[in-house]
Length: 121
Image: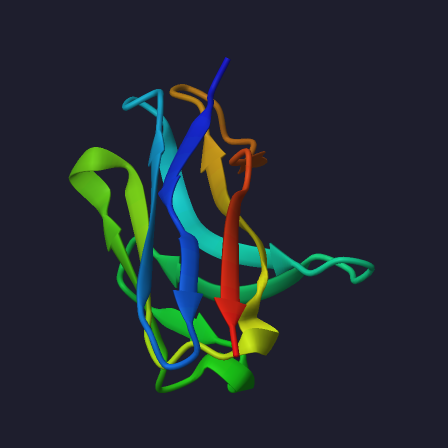
């Protein structure tokens, strides 16, 4: 079973920086895009940033200029560098991959287990 393994996150004061990393356990997976979502307590899960294997990126307005998403196609991994963090960035961050298994034309969503990011004021 394919797993996305997340690492990083933690606690930081407002204005600080954190990094999130995520790697797929199956290196033969044909990944088309990867992304980071977040879910704050009592809120819906929302897209934060996404990137295709070609390097095209998309950011939510409230993280533009502060967060940077990058992808390592050779390692089937994605990273999120977060700077100038604000208390409202506090949430559980989830890694996502849209990918197909070898020999298949069907794409599926795969999810990481979530990483807590806490920003104190």
